[in-house]
Each structure stands twice: as C-alpha cells, then as structure tokens.
Length: 152
Image 1 (cartoon, rainbow, N blue to C red):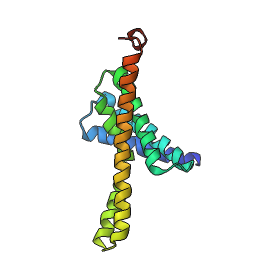
Image 2: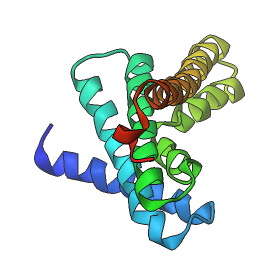
Image 3: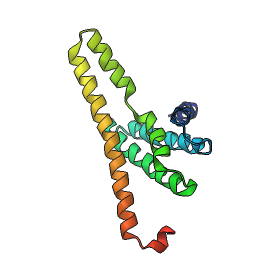
Image 4: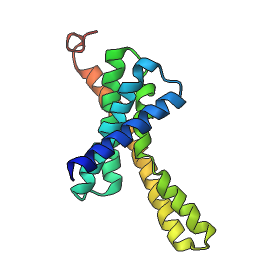
C-alpha cells in the first residue's frame, strides 16, 4: 500500500471513530483515543486484507485489537471501556455490505442479496467474537497475574 493511500485510511478511520465518539457523547478528552482505537483497528484490518486473510478472520483479529487498545485507554484515562470500544469498532462495521444486500433485494436480485447479507452477518458476528475474546483474555490475565504486576 502506498503511503498516501495508507494515510487516507488512517485519517478516514480516525475521523469516523472520533465522530461516532461525538455522536455517543463521549467525553471530549477521550475523542483522540476513540479515533486512535478506530484507526489502529482499521489499519490492522487493511494490512490483514493485503496479506489475503479472509475478511471474517481479519475482522475478528481487528476487533480483538481494538478491544485490547480500549482496555488500555480505559485503564490509563480512567474512563469506561465502552467509550473507546464502541467508537473504535465503527470502521469495521459492514454497513456497505448490508446496504448492497438491501439494494439487491430492491432490484429483485435475491441470490446476490443473500450472499451479501450472509457476508455482512458473518462479519458482524466476527466483531462480536473479537470483543468477547478480548474480554475473556483480559479477565484471564487479571485472574492469573498477581496484583502487584497489574498495579492494583
């Protein structure tokens, strides 16, 4: 990927994530972190796509990464994790696929609509799976590591 193309992806995903932070009334001091979480997740997704990883797998990994980053931001900035994770996940949401599926339904092209709808459904599930896996990983780390390593 060329540098200017990568910068466009970073900037667009950062603005989208920070913008959803504004829509969801995230604290102003957290908007930069919301954008950073979204940009990091989207860049990982794009990088995995260039490595020809399946979109569903890339989405699971990117959602996992966004949630890990959100846990870090939540701990450092003492803000609920949902502020960062919801905003950070936004670039991964398959809104374009869902739109295309409904567009094909409107054009009576049901075979393509079902295919696109199934892809959107699987990517949506992959986002949920990535969120759950990161939360389970966080809980296991908190349970197994002694408290002196976690700063509690």
